[in-house]
Image (cartoon, rainbow over the protein chains, first blue to last red):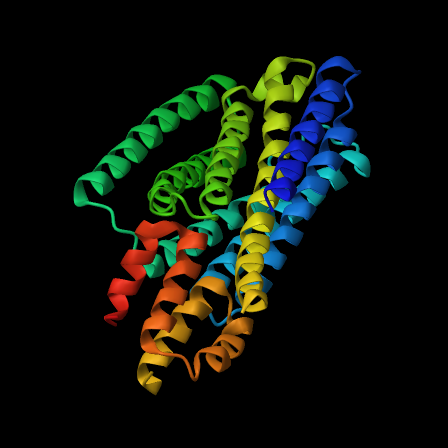
Length: 266
Length: 65
């Protein structure tokens, strides 16, 4: 399994590297970028379905993974809608659009999935740790609220642009808070096989947060496209979906390996 | 092992290893001793979720060796 895991991580790094090269050093091609992101999102949905099937819907783990997978599916639909605007309608920067509705819908599903996972796992964290995480989340929320408000008003955005900017701000603060809470889970799983996949899940959440943050903090640069902010933002999205895929696939695969190898050995 | 205890153990296995495998484990544990079952579940969970989380989960079941 270790070799499979290393192979998977290597594949993700190569895929992200190729994407980075094509984005950074070739002529700007938004359709390529949106297609690559959509494909990566689709892979993550497949990995989510796999993890859900391994646990089954009667278990809390299965329910948690189902919600996360539906969240990833909404993101995938959002990516497809974004691609449709660019490829068919020839709109380079479709924001705000119907795609944003699907992006936003994914956040509560992720939240619900992780809450089920954390609650049923009854992660043993002290009140002090919980307060620390909530304080950090509040600081991030207020700081990003301020930065996005500043960028929004300086750019003179309309109602829907402003609305979605702030909706994403709340959603991304949720992602960040979730990643802090999953860190408790990861600490509990130390020395277990699920330790690394959950660690990857945290990195995936953080990569999504980074991609979103760059998108909202540098709207003009993103719209323009031929600069580092755009490349880094798009790269973060691809990387995030690939890491979600790796994490969910490994969680399912490792769990299956452990249960089956035990029965075989007996 | 009493049915009630075995149900608890199988519930734990289902949550951590997936529902589809529970019956296989139930059949396998049916004629085993308490000590064997608890040691085996402990080892299984340790491999997957590590010793700390395993201790937590087993202590919540309130089953002693």
